[in-house]
Length: 216
Image 1 (cartoon, one colour):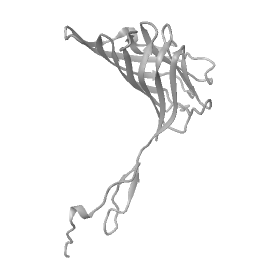
Image 2: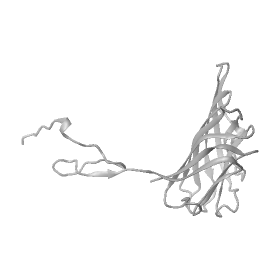
Image 3: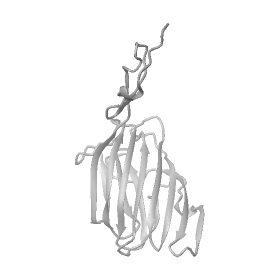
Image 4: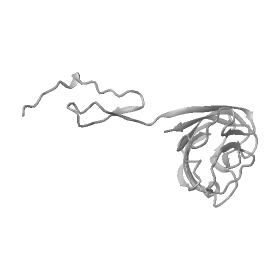
């Protein structure tokens, strides 16, 4: 059987958005495409001396249900009115109350601007053990004009009524040194989570945005 040779640059295998090249049993083997994942914008909240920022399913165009198995919150230039910690909690009753049991771990690395110190270690003051307290995401947030934090929080399958709800977060904070914080844990409920709230441990969220995406 003769082999046909094709020039590499004669093949256009560029996938369309949200798809990738797949292979099948046809003569050219490249007719099939596989649907890929997508990151769907849901809602952006902007802080302006805000005591809390909340995403409640079914309110103000927010989707936080079984539409997606993973939700991602993107935080941009979070800034506080006082030296404080930035936290979250969830609700199973449409935001009427926030206080579901959380078990979590946290570690961080720190490096000074003047290179005079650096450290890395577990942060026991940011972990929870079957606690209904708000979970720390940022442990140290300064008030200087150039201080701010950015980060990402992943919440997995919040609408499950079978399993607990896992989360992972990573935040980068600029004060007079750089802090990289890694937090993970689970929300110990088999009830569907339908709301999440963010706030400082004291004072307001002076500025910043939180954007919610659904992942499929």
